[in-house]
Image (cartoon, rainbow, N blue to C red; front, top):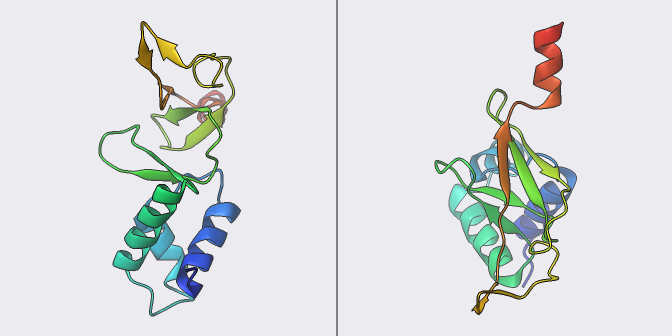
Length: 127
């Protein structure tokens, strides 16, 4: 059952597709307009969204969970300087669902993470 809070969380996720937000980022933004919103509500909503396949969880850094509303297979780039997580499109037969197994193992999820310095941070260093 969609609640008002869940609808607002999904709207936030859709509006901020490129930021791959954390629970804290969502709370910080939405609690200003929804003072009754709690961190627990956000955790519960995101867990429900995960179960329904509406979002996916990203754990690139190992210290935080980020959420992605783009559930199509794709890879991510983590900028070690600014911390942004950016969707990248690289050819990977496993991420595109062309391959369903490797050595007899059934593949259910593929996570491709690249780490380095993003083009925006590189431009700052040159300028």
